[in-house]
Amino acid sequence: MSSSANALAAFVEAAPPGELSNVTSAIKTLANESALKTLEPAYKKYNEDQLTTVKLPGASQSVLVSEHNSLDGDRYYDVESSSSFAFDHATQKASDTQSYVLESSHSDTVKSILKALKTHTDEHFQTSTLGVFPTASDSKIAILIVANKYSPNNFWNGRWRSKYIYDPSSNSLTGSIAVDVHYYEDGNVRLITNKDVTASASSSAADVVKGIAAAERKYQEELNRGFTGLSEGAFKGLRRQLPVTRQKMEWEKVSSYRVGQDIGGAGRR
Amino acid sequence: MSTDPFDAALDLLRRLNPKDTAVNVTRLCDLVPSLTEDLLESVDVPLAVKRDRKTGREFLCCDYNRDGDSWRSPWSNEFEPPLEDGETDSVMPSEKVRKMEIKANEAFDVYRELYFEGGISSVYFWDIDDGFAGCVLLKKSVSPSAKSSGSWDSIHVFEAQDRARRAHYKLTSTVILNLGSSSDNLGGMDLSGNMVRQVEQDMPVEDDSSHVANVGKLVEDMEGKMRNLLQEVYFGKAKDVVGDLRSIAPLSERNRDQAAHREMISGMSK
Image 1 (cartoon, rainbow over the protein chains, first blue to last red):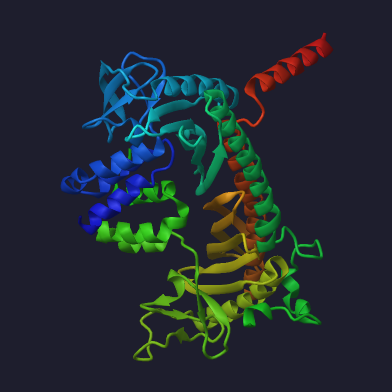
Image 2: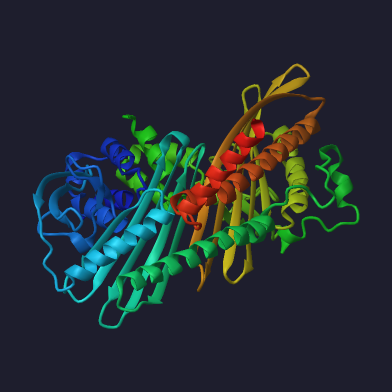
């Protein structure tokens, strides 16, 4: 791959929540057609990593796209609506819905986790999209939650992603939670977090969801403490709101500050 | 939708992770070489530090004190590393403007100590028609614990146009604030970015020292405002958006509380 194609792929994969189309239109202005054609893998990686949500034609509920529900070609399936669909990675549009019946030794567990998970997410996310799928080898179950909130008119967008793998043979739950917030009014500010989580869960779907709920609650409380820690710690240590004297600087009397103080010592280390 | 490549590049940089701005500028310059000069001039990245070999003091580097791969120190007025032929292609400030530049560096050194209690400052001035222009640079990094760190880079670029016993100042300020924290319980948390603000103001001028004081006051006010703004966005807005994405309290409980609250309010107004 040429360096310009690598650069464009890096731009696509770094698109903030809800801003892929803006990144795409900027790229189209900057690159030529042949470079753009190489971007399909980058779009696919972005959509599968970010759990991109899409409404199926004629449906009101959103479904998500991930590595765990991918079929041959660019088709994906949804358990709840028992359907599969074609997905255009560059435009993030779904088409050609067909019926799809899940064939897995864990079909019943998948469906009961999905049901229990929905009760949990309805209580904690205003809008969220779920996916529960057997893994490729059919030995484990992938559990995915994505919540997006876009407010481009107010220059901010946000995304919460939870990804877990539940192993029914050991009753273990491992995964990660990631939060991504972008604020871009007269600037560009980004919050990016990532936390690996593990929890034990007995064999019932309710217990699996209970493990997820506890891990997410604990993480969110920790993240709130993280904001306070940075605000009280690093941020305060960078620049004072006012000098120790609580007075603004007297610019007409610069020389007076030099008397009896070793000002500037830190800069001369 | 923008079709001008420069606008498209700036739009992209406003969207992509602000921590990667420097590498993304390089990528954009490789992609569209004709944008190189404009991008390097208008996109702010964290300031590089050099040491002045004559005075031993550290100073900050930007496009305004650069000549090729060398940067002029405000302390000795010499380039680091020294220019090969000993001569500069850059236009050095006139004697009058260099005198103000020296005064401004002394003043902002005091300012830096008062507000940052450490860090590095550098001020560069240059001549323009009907006045002078300059940039004031401040940088500080902290790591209050092994688990957290932060850095502040402020870049204030201004023009001062002389008018009768007054001057018209036009200031553009950028603050790059990067904060990060990581621990077993928290995982990784990165809260980084930049904000830009502009202001224009007429201020009285008696002599050249008035300019230094005027620029000082403008920058001091601007940084105070921007510090508040950054606090609001980083610790208010970003945190609120996380709370909007996921509520710790069950939504049914929250909705019930809100309904009860509304009922109480309407009961009181009856």
